[in-house]
Amino acid sequence: MWSNFLSTGLATLAFLATVQGQSVDAGKTVIVGGIAYYASPEVVSIIDATQDQLKRALTTGQDLIPLTVISDSSSSFTVEVFRQTVGNYSKVDDVFNNGFLQCE
Image 1 (cartoon, rainbow, N blue to C red):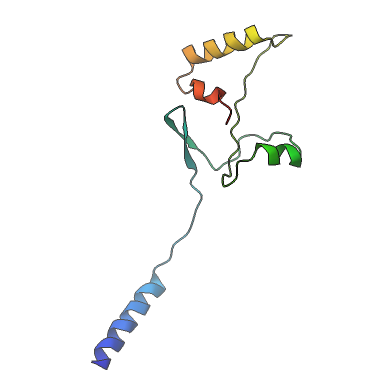
Image 2: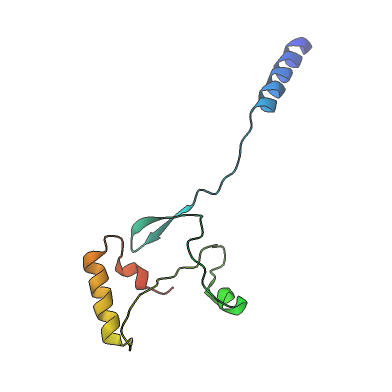
């Protein structure tokens, strides 16, 4: 009985010693407006923000800060320009949805 137990134990230890794993951050899936999006772990841009601004934007338990960047070349970014820009994004951008405009 002990010899059986010993050989099984040694075989298990030998198996455990040869199995190796590695934890790699492969990104996350986030849901925006009911649609799943992949968020890469690679940095694509850096935004200048103070520690206080980052703390206020952070959601407890989350390591992503939701952010939508709207680009405009007009000299005055008005509510009307915003509405036109969002309307255009909705028509031509297959990824954009109104969930990107929500604050929580």
